[in-house]
Image 1 (tube, rainbow, N blue to C red):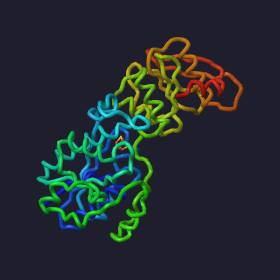
Image 2 (image 1 turned 60 degrees about the horizontal axis):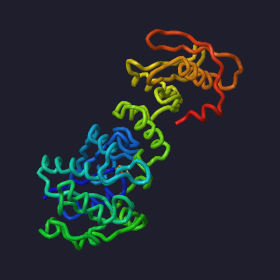
Image 3 (image 1 turned 135 degrees about the horizontal axis):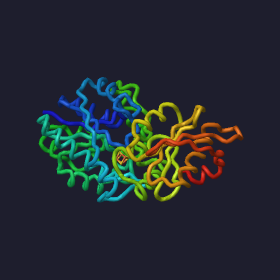
Image 4 (image 1 turned 90 degrees about the vertical axis):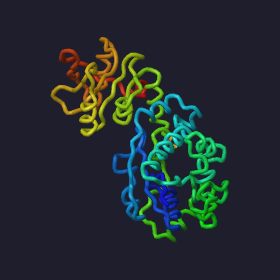
Length: 327
Ligand code: SF4
């Protein structure tokens, strides 16, 4: 008997997999990344591989790209507090898990969901919708809350012993921490975030992209770095905050973008996106000048590279004005 465990490397998903492993069932963990995970490929600020290693089980990764963007743009079940389409997100991830289940010849899915822990996606109605829409009705075992939910096929068939599952609910983490201690699970992360779609500051930029920009993976990557300024409906400026971001901006630059840099001064790289006119060009140069020479009073030369390269000499933009334009 084999199962696929959705795995974030967090405590709940680790415990859920462990509870099933303890019943002698073979478990493969599946770590799904989306364009909005606050993580690199190594895991969500968590060493996902380390957590899987502690359990002694295989970790498989999957990236959800374009298909994920379409649910963020048009979620069938709406958003949570910000732009988090949690129900659609869970459905998509579970559909992926279903594919992996077939690939591995597994019989059911395990998740670390806890009843009542998240208002949008972890109440009974939402769990039912997610099961139906993912085509996995009766095949999702949620070991941490199973005793509070209807028995699943694996329980009815006796593959999984229901009396060895749990009845945890709500937002408290105390039962999970006790269980981690019991199982000897260490170095688990705190319960914070992991998804930019719940971050109000990021969602402000995302709203701007919905309103004025092109919604694609490259633009999403740009939303994650730099300071963003909406100069007018047709033009946006992104300014790197450090050397690493300056380099990343250059990597993400596209053919029609405008590159701004202070001449003969250390300072940020700026990428202008959209239709550049004289006003937005000068305004962008003034913003670059502000960050290139934050305290000086002199005029500053800024290189502007578009179809041709030119140098404009500008005064630094006033900080208050910068804040007004900032997204
Ligand atoms: S918080 Fe983000 S990753 Fe988690 S279910 Fe909601 S949309 Fe998906």
